[in-house]
Image (cartoon, rainbow, N blue to C red; front, top):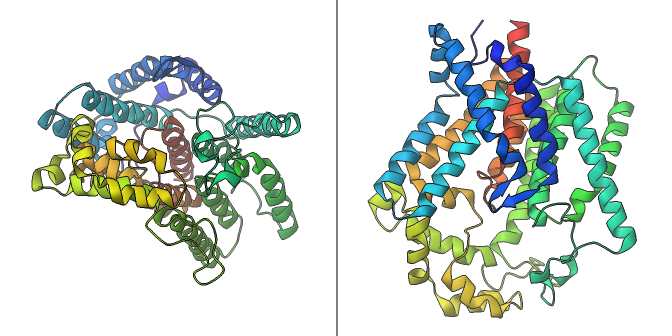
Length: 427
């Protein structure tokens, strides 16, 4: 049996309690001082837990070696490359801050992947959080308290301006956060005990669809994350999984293609003739994605180490084409945003964000880490949940920054940790 990075410290009641406290505080999203939230105060506890585990493993050479094997080795590789890139182009606080974010995300992953939380408790947590979100959405709809995404008002996207924010500042944050309680619920029920009959599976999916109604109200393309995970759970429950696996992977990728069209083109208003959507120009996000791409590929050094967030803000306006950007924003009836689009915008693309911050080698290491988690979990334990989650994550990174989202790393850690423990128990 392969020894994992876990040890007895992972089961410490204090560290398990800290994990649950973080999970309970996370959806409350209580701000302290931007960008710090209440749940982030547990960060030092997590680092302390990792230090304790390291000390306990120091006398076990195998315990240390496990960190240097695939798939775990690619995470420290990414961090080392990010540190070297930051030192190579250090221009100011934003560069250090960006490095701090990825280090914090790595701490979250390392802590939660080695902290065993009981499946049934995760299932109850997921059901509880989904129920609270459902109740909040219902109250907002009945009371007329549903918030409006102001930037969409009086535009071609005005019909989706009213959206579900829950406790977050943006509906896309809710859209990506939703995958955490969905994952916790599925960890507790998918693949455990006997396989569900068709009738039971259909009833389970109908119940899940009801719980996901608030997710639909976010109008966020990040719903693909939760949908992909649920597709993986369906495959787990089928006896002849290979055919079902390919069917649902194709379905997830097909949904991604449709969603991505709304990124590549203005899409709305819909047209009466083929291809039936507005394709008069490229889409809004592509204006700043093109700028990021030009910055990333401007020379070999930028591709190797990136330029960093600080220099990016100086380079961005020098590569912006104001007239072109205005022509694109005209399709959305948002020409008043032209100046801000010419000054600085997030790329809304994780690949471009990570590449411009730390360079292409760091990006490759990060992607390799995610993909290897899915491959190793699937090969060792036929774990469909990790596989489908990573597929959904790689898709959603085409239209948003997800590396900085705490719940993404916690979800991956919980899925990978449970898959690995299943493998170790069966060995």
